[in-house]
Length: 478
Image (cartoon, rainbow, N blue to C red; front, side, top):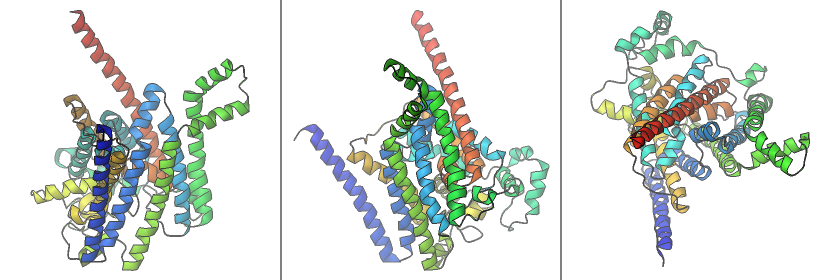
């Protein structure tokens, strides 16, 4: 048996070991109480997401970096196709009234947040979801990015003091007027005043409702949220990508073949661009199906157990620590990242003595339950596991130690993504991918900012690289 065959066999054993461990966790937890099937549902959907992400190399940072830096549109096109496919599946779920999705307030803040996040993901070399799946591949830089995002979020949401001087008086007064529970000190925290004093005052806009349709109807879900909210704007973006990044090469090929640029040939060029992103689109198809199924499964389990939030289940099981003042925990019911990672750090900070349950993010909305019994935590950990299994089976798993320079960029980029996530109420998944696919107008606003931020990040890196090369060449001349 040669070395390559032995390595492949070893990888397969590790992959089977990960799957076996997750199966064992699911069986043992269910044996303790049937409520744990709720958490196991998150686990297995996270596992599927990890496999899909790794297979499709599904990373928003890579998509925009490749487009703006070297003019390769494959990943951007794949993400747009995946969004359309996800939206189509989600429309079915929404039309049945089984959707667990909650639209976000719509304002220019989403674009600003996306801008900060976009710069950060280019600096870090991976978006929030991309960093998670790359961690599953053994990438040390990506692990640093995940840690940086998480620590930044957990710190940023409880920051006050000098930063409160930056809060407009109108935000402060509006936050106090909300009369939140006494345990939540909304007047003494920058993010709290931003949320309660500004964000909560903004309208929630879905494309179905803009057309005067109910989102929980076939007309609203398919005509409003899917067709108008996703297909049309995505088609426009795909045309823009074709015109600015693909068409020139296509016309050159036509000229060499002695053909003219007729509308039919242009259409073939556009379709060729779409077809070149098969792997990412296929991953997006399975992501879309899984996301839709997760909403159905989670909503079904909520009905079965007579709850609206996993916090009630944890309370019934005797796990009261870390629940919000409303008795809830972060329980989105669909694919989401960043919040659960912030909860990991928030829980650790609290155990170390940081009183961080008096803010809106942890204390009112999401809580900081023990990571061992937190549904969304299981989803992210299983996502890493799913990516690891796929990487092992395809012989793409490899531990990669970060260099000092990459480590610095990972920490800085992760911090910017953490700030952008909290300002935008989500990351490239929660604030863009899921919201856009489910007809939430704020998703496109975040996306516009994210694209702009990615462009700035790429331009900055080009300048930085040229500057470093000039220094090296100057030293060489000496």
